[in-house]
Length: 213
Image 1 (cartoon, helix red, strand yellow):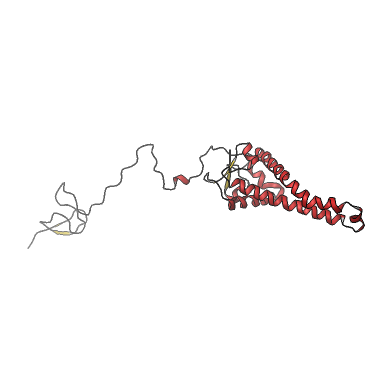
Image 2: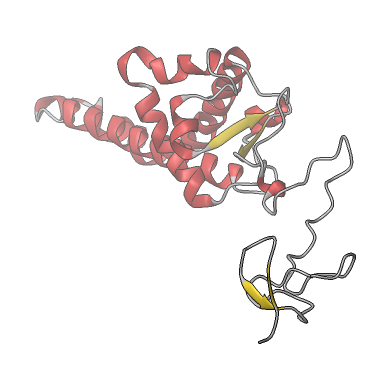
C-alpha cells in the first residue's frame, strides 16, 4: 500500500512521493515554488505620489481658481446691454419709430385713432429686436474663441464649462434663457453669485458653466 501524507495547508490526502498538493498546489519541498501560486501584488506607489485616474484630465478646476464676482459681472452686463441697444437703435428707428414719425404723431393719425397702435407697434418691434439681438450676441460671443461678450472681455472674464472648456452655441443659448429664471423672485438667481463657492448664478448652475477671471 502506498504511503500517503496530508497537505499542511488544505488537509488534502496526497501520495507520499508527490512534490505538490493535488488540491491547492502547495509545495511539499521546502523552498520550491508552489504551482498555481497567486501573482505578486503590484508595487505600491512611491511616497507622495498618488495614482491618477483615467479621467483626471476632466477634473473640476482646482480650488483657489479665479471666478468673477457679482459686481464686476453687473458692470459687464450693463456694458453689453448698451452695446445691444446701440446696434438695435437704428434698426428699431427704421421699422418701429419710423412708423411713428410717418403717421403716429400726425393729425391724420390722431383723427383716426392710430397714435396708440403705432406706439404699440414701435415698442413691440424694438422689444423683439432687443430680445433677439441679446440672445444672438451673447450665444455667438460665448461660443466663439473669445468665450466672452465685449463687457466680459474688458474685465478679462471668460465663460467655460465646469472643466474649463469652451461652451458651444446650444449651451450658450441655454445659459442665456436660463437668466430669465435668475431674474424671478427679486433676482435671487443673480444674487446667488455672491454666495456660491464658484460664483455661480442660478443660470450658471442650470447650464453647467463658470465665469472665470
